[in-house]
Image (cartoon, rainbow, N blue to C red; front, side, top):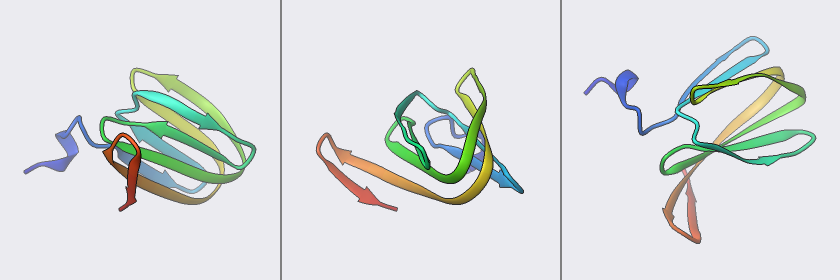
Length: 84
């Protein structure tokens, strides 16, 4: 299976001070040091010091800043999340 073409999963690219997340459905939370977005069945949280959203277009989100970490949570049911 070619995971690069799976449009149901988040595709995350991190390089230097840039984080690109593809297949984003919506922004769930924006905080001072983190941002959480929703993909089909997963939530992606980017932790960053002083981040700036540079682009939101066509399911693609580009964040620039000192990326400190990325968390992916799988929504197994409406109120039950598990870290992957």
